[in-house]
Length: 220
Ligand SMILES: [Zn+2]
Ligand SMILES: [Zn+2]
Ligand SMILES: [Zn+2]
Ligand SMILES: [Zn+2]
Image (cartoon, rainbow, N blue to C red; front, side, top):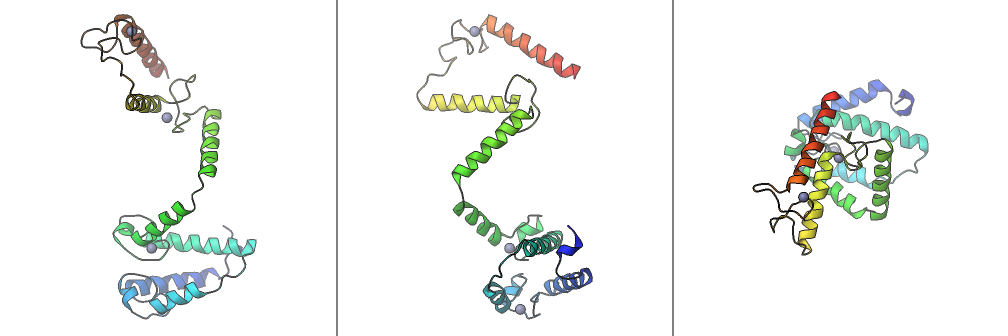
């Protein structure tokens, strides 16, 4: 961020910040220095100043103004986060002390806003784009991490999870799970080996495949 984007010079900003932090530590309003119920609750502004700051009419945003505003917001957000305060309102609560960016009140507000502004169509577009990007990069299409076998779309972890979800769905929709009748889990034709879920030939194939994977991992 270039220095030009800021409306106020650096030394003024630093002075403002010092003043703000001092007021906050003393439980006073960051704007006027008054103490009231709000500031006693750990909020950064008294009720009157809060009212005033919300009542201000919004000036039309030019590109430059937006840039400057965002730069200022980022700077204050960082300072508040470093001081263990809510990034949005400057309050301190159990959440912010534990390193979260927002106090309980603000995080609730944010999630409500996010819920109201949801756009399922756009979300699925984004999801699809993300998936395609991952496939193009040769990564797992679900989690984006490197995958063990290049000819598969997913990594082993995601494949196991997907399979588990699929089986669960099948069972829920009335499908008889494999292995219940004592037959092989894989081919569902031969009887399974006692104490195992696979028949002899499927078991041998599986072991062979696993050995291949192990050998591949060792050679990497
Ligand atoms: Zn005030
Ligand atoms: Zn907050
Ligand atoms: Zn994955
Ligand atoms: Zn089998």
